[in-house]
Image (cartoon, rainbow, N blue to C red; front, side):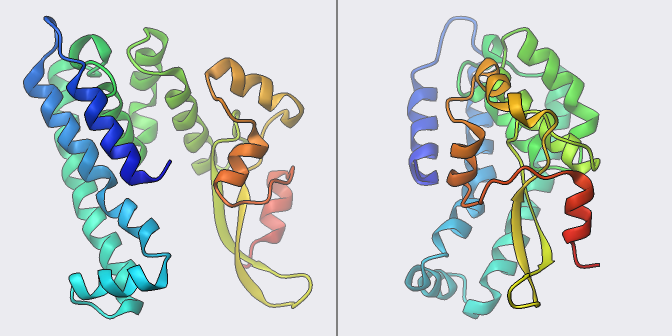
Length: 227
């Protein structure tokens, strides 16, 4: 499903989640926060179409070659604002889970943290929310994987891809390469994924991310990278 569809579905489902115990004001704020979290990320997907990229460049009054940097700068500003507000929300409510704001509004804070530099700080809070069924467990699994990858450790569920410059064995030239970050016990990763609530296998997920899945070790990845 395209990101535009995801955002629309998020809002439609969210509008049907009001209940007697729901904090409707916070819910609306989180719904808006989620849309902003996705806004420029969605546009960066759209810009992969050259014609649409030219149109976007005109809308933002930048040269096409500067569009990516421009969109990332805007998204980074949104992310900084979002995480600042999320930290205030957490101090007041703890993790705003399904009981407090309904679903899928309970996922908004997860995405803001996932796109911040504070994953390790809030990972225990997200884990607790998942264990208490205030948040889908698979989202905690994604955050756990990202934390492990960022700390140069093997991920558990195979959710994270990593890009870096590597030497092409055929051309002998450096080029940008995407891999699924190394996984601990890769033989059983699909079993773990199913238990965590993922519908796709690690192979299917890699295809969704346009990455050729290969079983790699961290040592092999480090050798591949152009220093």
